[in-house]
Amino acid sequence: MATATVKLNNREASKKNFSKEIAFFETSFIEVNQEKMLSHASAEYGVRESGVLSLDGFGYYSRNIDYLVAKHGRLKGNMIYLDGNVTFKEKEGGIYKAEHAVYNQKSEILHIPSSFTAFHNRDIFHGQALEYHAKTKEVNCSQIDAVFYTTKK
Image (cartoon, rainbow, N blue to C red; front, top):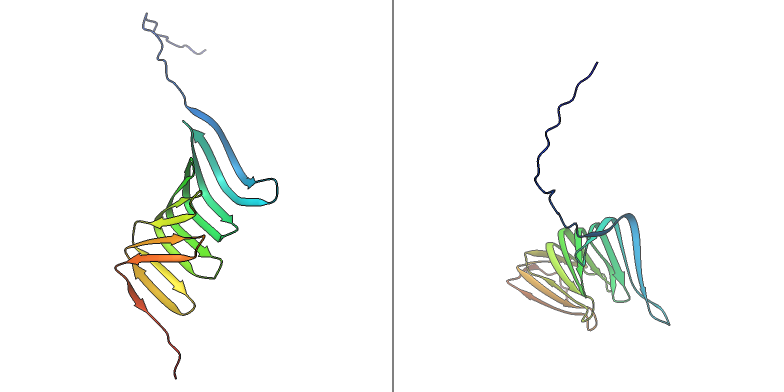
């Protein structure tokens, strides 16, 4: 025989507003126009809450980016906020690694506000901040420590 005790009172039940709109596993998002694919994003897990899409196991590529991956990504409007083991590979082969980055899909500018390591062929760069313009393939860095390999003449 089992018994249960229940306490009753006149208190109003709490009114929590849940803002989770959708949750999903292993999903791809493909942005297209009438002519071609513009970009492709994927995630192992994601949730959209209050208009912000949060993604774990994030991956992204477009016509100007070979790949952009991170442990966590947040999409808000045209901005992608990346955290944890961020790796970016440009179409020309350069690879950039950092813990944090922000990518603006509209302007196609990747901003790394933290320390980073970049690899171009055999050249290795370490720096404190980086801005990469995907349209023009221009890179601006600050506080660089680099090892360059040059050809003998």
